[in-house]
Structures are given as C-alpha cells and as structure tokens.
Image (cartoon, rainbow, N blue to C red; front, side):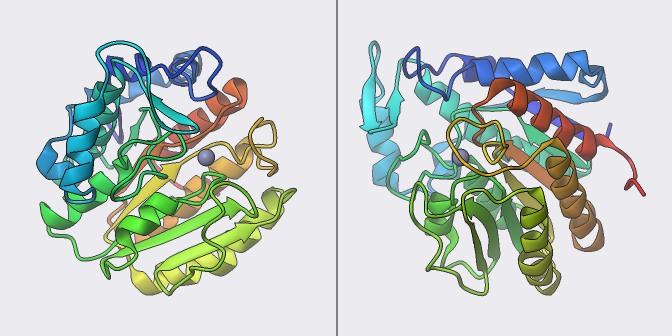
Length: 311
Ligand SMILES: [Zn+2]
C-alpha cells in the first residue's frame, strides 16, 4: 500500500475540558469519514509507539521533558498555558503522537510505504524547545524530522506547515539548523503573533491577511514556497497538516476549502516526486470545525494515497 495511517487509542483520551475545541471528537470525525469514503481498508494501519526520551531530547531540552513527566497529573488537570492543559492520559497521548512521527519516518525511509498520515493529537507545532503552548506539549513533526536527520542521516528535510497559525515552535527548534527548511503560511496578525518578521532563506514565513481565500493562498505557495523548495531540494517532506485555515473554522478567518487542501497536497507530492523519492510524512495539527476538518483531512489523505497526479 502507498500510505500508512498511524494512530493510537490514547490519542482519544487526552481531554482538557468538555468545551475545549481541541477535542477527541476531531480524531473520531476523521476516522469515521475515512470509513464512509471507503478509504480505511486501503490504508496500511499502524499503532504508534511512544517516543523515547532520546528521540524527544533531539528537539526539546532534557529539563523540559523531565518537567512534563514530573507534572503529568494522576487525576484532574494541570495547566501549561492559558490554552493548554494535561489530564491523566495527556502525557501518553503526546508521547504516542511524537512516536507516530518516528515510526512514520522509519516506514517511509525503509520503503514499506511511500507516505504516511499521523492521525494524532494533541497537535505539536507550537511546542518550543523548552515550553508548551497553544494546545501543544511536544513537537511531533520536529521529533520526526530530527529522527530523519540523526538516525537516517538525511542532509536536507523540508517542513510545510499550512495550519492557520504560524509554526513558531518548529521555527524555534530548527531556526539555526541548516539541514531544515520550514515553509509556513499563517493568518497574520493572529495567534501566536510571530513569523512576519523572522523570515530567512530557510524559514519561509508567509503571512496572510484575514479573509485570504484559496486563490490568494495558492498564489503565495507558488511564488514563495515553490522557488525555495526547488532550491533546497529536500530529501524528505514533513507536513504540519492543520485544517483550521478552512473557511468554516471557528477559530480563524481564512477562506480555504476542501479543494485547496487537495491542491496543496498535489503541490507537495510534485516537489517530493522531483527531489525526495516521493517521501512525505504528514501529521495532524489544528482544525476545529468537525465536518470541515473531516472532509479536508480525508481529501488530503486520499490525495496522498493516489498513485498518480491528476491531470
Ligand atoms: Zn492552528
């Protein structure tokens, strides 16, 4: 099979509070839509292992990893920032989410599958080297990228982050690593407020004003991401796949639709086919309107699964 779907039951057991938009129902909505679309049986399913401290401390400080393990509650909630909390199963969920990206890296590097989607939560791209933020505890995509660099000895890895929020944690981790390019589109000004002033030749930050629709998004990807990626020639592409830039998302004000997620996935596949042997690992980040999330994520996965580029 072309595509692995990597998840873990504990990803459903991380609960911050009943009304929090980053809820287990997000995973259930995607899984149900995969079944309804008839795609579930055509995916190679894998259960995510927990990431090890060795894997986590490639991108997080040892002190931060120790602190998260120490404060993880046996009952009740521990607050990490205004938007982020840990319950009794949150540590396990976030360890499996990082581990999903490690397993995905091994599967894709070994050629067992061409690409992979990590259907996990909490999200990860706001997690910095030494702090949690914005629903995120550990930075799963960064853990996967570091595994590709350190264990599989790749020289150039690109991360494409189309979540509506800037991938500030990922930038914090890889800003000074010449082996990593981050291409991030994000609504600006908006949470977390970063990115617009920190562009470099490897941190390809592309702020988008509120109200930007799919046409404006595609034009920016073509004019900003494409030349940078063609120059960098990544050997592997990771995707911080947030679906909260969708027009229906309640947390943000961009105007992407399902077809825009198909388009960006085809764009990523074309770059990966030219430079990376087709190797793509995508990991769920945001997306808070359940029907829009399910429809968009499944369109993204379907496009990853398809054997050829549509005309
Ligand atoms: Zn987001």
